[in-house]
Length: 205
Image (cartoon, rainbow, N blue to C red; front, side, top):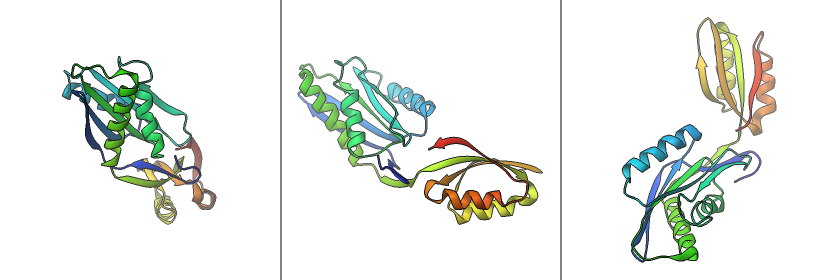
């Protein structure tokens, strides 16, 4: 993953197939927002491929490098999930999920063969996705009066902030993502808005 102010992720999903001695390895790469989304995607893949012998996966979330999960799904330990994650990391991407389903072809591949197959399938799936570079965000919660909305939106627009959620009534609440490289100046502008309450609610995205 890119360190500092930006990170790299995939913008579109991709699918590829790798074959070895009769076994089929179908790899699907997805952009991923959170673990709840992961559960839904995995359930959908299992429903689409109910007869596959294995549904192996790996994902990485966030920009600190600490949030990831791997699964060999019944394959020998270390032969599927870790090789898949290795391809995610080799492309320096995060917020990404790769699921590889295997249809067994009757010939044993052995540990080296399985590692190569899952690695190759994952790499092929990533190759057909679209990579994008995004700013690292810090998330802030705002509370303000509706009459201050134009001032807040001017700051959001000027500093390329992202509105994550909002509730606009007489009393407004808003969560915004501020690009890390523009954090100091944008927070100063927000703090200048009279009676606006500002609180950081999540560390680095």
